[in-house]
Length: 136
Image 1 (tube, helix red, strand yellow):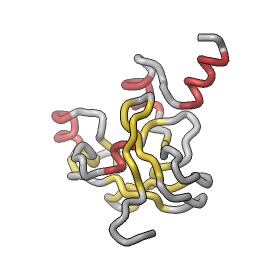
Image 2 (image 1 turned 120 degrees about the vertical axis):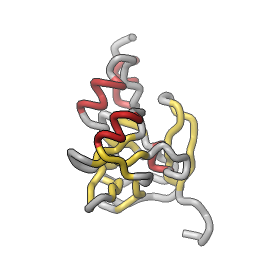
Image 3 (image 1 turned 90 degrees about the vertical axis):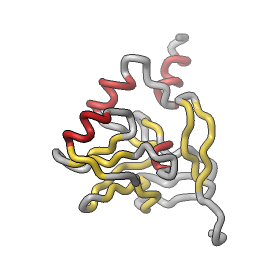
C-alpha cells in the first residue's frame, strides 16, 4: 500500500452508502476496526441509533462518528466479513477472498435484522437477486 493512500472508498449502494476495498483482501485477514466512544448499556439505550456495535452484555461502541469508516459496512445475508471482539475492540475480518473494488459486508445478526432491516426489506445483493429472479 502507498503511504497516505486510503485502502477504502465510501460509495453509493442500494442500501445508502457502503465501504469498498480498493485492494484485494485475502481470506482470514483483519480489515478494519469499528471505532467510537464506548457506552454502557444505559447510555446506549438513551442514545439508540443504528451505529451501535455490541461488545458484550454491558458495553457497546457508538460508531456514529464519520471518522469510523467501518460504520459504512452494510449488512449482507451472504457476507464477506465477520466482526470479532478482542477486549473492548471490535475488528472486521475477511471470511473469504475479497476482490479490489468489492463492497465489504457482514451479517448484522438476527436482532438488528429483525428490528431495522426486515421491516423495510433486505437490500443486500443476495436478497435483491432473489427478488429479481422471482419476478418481484
